[in-house]
Amino acid sequence: MASKEIPYKIYLEESQMPKAWYNLRADMKNKPAPLLDSETKKPITAEKLQNVFCKELVKQELDENTAYFEIPEAIRNFYKMYRPSPLVRAYCLEEKLKTPAKIYYKFEGNNTSGSHKLNSAIAQAYYAKEQGLVGVTTETGAGQWGTALSMACSYFGLDCKVYMVKCSYEQKPFRREVMRTYGASVTPSPSTETAVGRKILEKHPGTTGSLGCAISEAVEAATVKEGYRYVLGSVLNQVMLHQSVIGLETKAALDMYGVKPDMIIGCAGGGSNLGGLIAPFMGEKLRGEADYEFIAVEPVSCPTLTRGKYVYDYCDTGMVCPLAKMYTLGSDYIPAASHAGGLRYHGMNSTLSQLCYDGLMEARSVSQTEVFEAAEFFARVEGILPAPESSHAIKVAIDEANKCKETGEEKVIVFGLTGTGYFDMYAYEKFHDGKMDNYIPTDEEIEKALSNIPVIE
Image (cartoon, rainbow, N blue to C red; front, side):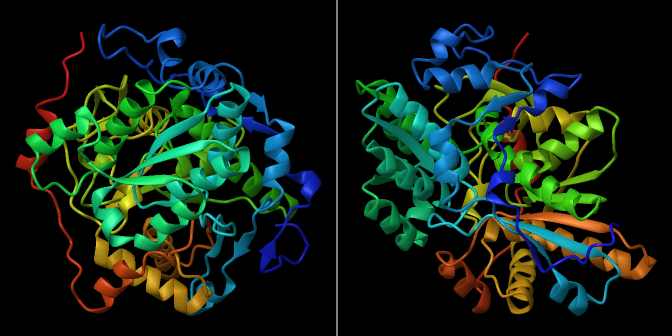
């Protein structure tokens, strides 16, 4: 530790904000496997991807050797609206837990969209505008990504079409209305608007939807409309690249006070916020410069890393997107209507999947009620109502801090508080009324979904 007194909140100067995104893949000895064309099952070409994604984003997606990508000035200027975000020392939480551990959280909820999602949304909207597009389509689970993208598209004057997972559309009407306030059109998914939506509804009548379903619809909508492209809020490496601003700022703030974390914890759905948080620290570990423990936390209702298989699978339920080698429960898996809607994805980012497969990162799954118990405790102690997704990381951070109390170890624990939960009051109501369940899929359910994954030679 340095001799400086560590404040409650550590703010970087505007001049210390990252000027480039960090591409973790550049430091990986075992690179993630390439995306495969859904038709040929061969590595997909940039030309094919450009039919769906913006050209510059395709370059970022496929580049596994360039360590840093300069952040365009227009994006940096937008970031100044809410970045650098604070790194908070959780003194009150430490005191309540009576733990010798030192706990920090990187707070990404201090912007209008309420989460970290804006970091990539503004980048993707910028590249769409630069390409001269009319608009973009996307999916959203809990609604944070749809909200962020709606805001970013409004800023650049782009049309925005959002397919929102049906259970979240019904549970989170206020988040839906924020999207509409920014000018986006919002459709519950699966819908009858698209061919793939109608096909999913026929196969799964009455389904509450999933991110995989919504992705399929958004991709179809983008490819049939002239001047539109599809953008994604997580899963892809381009998104993780943009989210590296989280980790870069976290490391800069800790370095400023001579603090080295022992453990870095993040919630895991598609992988963008977790990947962004751990990126520079994992880079040091891969280069042999330092060692850290990394923990990915997911819901027991959608246990991708803890119960899935590491194989090639479709990124969407409609099987129209490229295939990625990742931990997956099967693209046909429809998770229970969990209140952590942003974590209801059947697969995991290919880079994080490779790191987990190589034993460089640990994965844990936690139940919904214990997550909300941790969320409520955190809100009462630290004064921030956390998003259900972020609360998965809070739960494990508290667990680890309690272990330190038992052993007397003074570990430094860092976790990502990716967003606020003020639009998630329906979920909190269910918890407080004792009506929240802890659905755990059976082995048979998972095996059934996994039985439909493609066989790649």
